[in-house]
Amino acid sequence: MKRLGIALIIALLPAILIPAHKANAAMVCAKRSDVIKRLKQRFDERPTSVGIVGENLLELYTSKQGSFTVVITRADGVSCLVLAGQNWRRVKQKTPQP
Image (cartoon, rainbow, N blue to C red; front, top):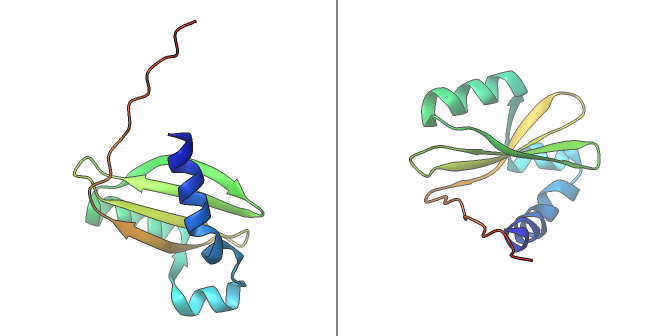
């Protein structure tokens, strides 16, 4: 799971590091409350993971049907859809034995 998290961050780094005015041209952005509402209504996606990247909030939204969306919320409260996909699966981790 740790590898998946690192891979996801590396994959998202270019989008996170793009200045806000350039990011708006490439991504769909709106008020955070509107983005969350839309993801819930349209795809039944709910937040499952969060993290802080600089001054931005990175969130992963997933549904029981397997759809997922990665959202970045800037300090000004604007959220941008970074990527979305299908077939998201949770990986069950085994507890290490002493």
